[in-house]
Image (tube, rainbow, N blue to C red; front, side, top):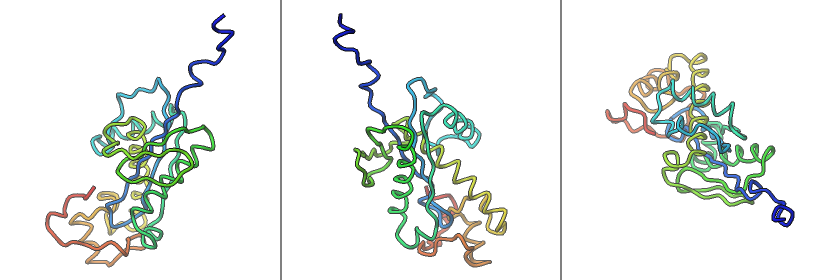
Length: 207
């Protein structure tokens, strides 16, 4: 009798959550890349973490699993030219918004969780989660896809402009990158509105 009165399944009340994150806000060169991910309830969540805390091997393994098992995912990038024309924050939010719209073509999203403290405009609720890439599985997955895709793009850039060492530092302001800029000038994918701080401590990537 109860099933006849209430024929709607429990799953129809579930909220579909999408997670968004980006990679590439800190570099001096290349695009900013963002991803949006929706995960199923039976996803192997133990493989996820903030992409920066995973080794490259772990990221690539997790990336393959996310691409295979995610309910939906999408990746978008915004070029260095657009970053120069607007700014890195707007470009990061734009990349995430584009990724979300791609995901929404395949699934109905009820809530979007974004890493950080800023959100983009949408006709569905979007909530910013500080350090969300260490807390929210969907954001962790998005951070992994964004990071691995951007690294892949920078390795391709390295083939075209090997003197800059993009495959190694991915465009971040390391000593090697700064030395290459001083020796060869900016490459075609350098962000012209980003200013170098010539300090020895800039040898490590600024994430």
